[in-house]
Image (cartoon, rainbow, N blue to C red; front, side, top):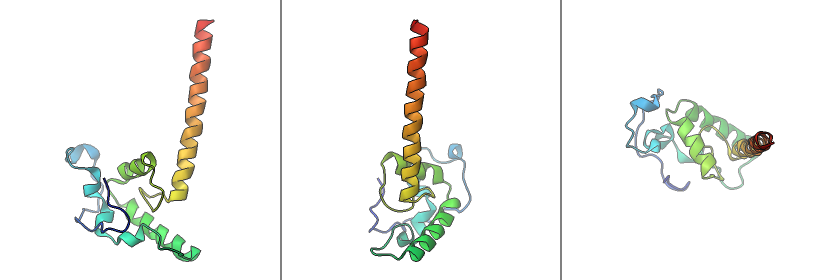
Amino acid sequence: MLQPPHSSLQVAAVPAQRVPVRDRDQDAPWHTEAVCRRDEAGLFFAPSKEPTAARLSREEAAKRVCARCPVMVECREHALLQPEPYGVWGGLTAAERRVVLARRRRRDVELKKVAGAGRIAQAG
């Protein structure tokens, strides 16, 4: 489990290049390779009453860190499955993750409708 936003994520240095999943130690948790573990945690989580311009700037800086992370996809999926309500995870803000989740829900509903229609057609 990841540390809460108020605790330090500066535990281990991680190489900046992407490492294919199959080449990583499969027994180690994905977050041990996260680039953000060596960056300022405040970059990924908003301080209270942060002005909009400052928030947008901070989020863009966090996304640049995510863009060079070897476990960005794993991080993003973690944040979508939890779901993490705050911060930048896997290159997405909380608002962007809500959009992705809404799209996934709509897609799942559509897939169920199509599957249901297929079963009805086969039975008839």
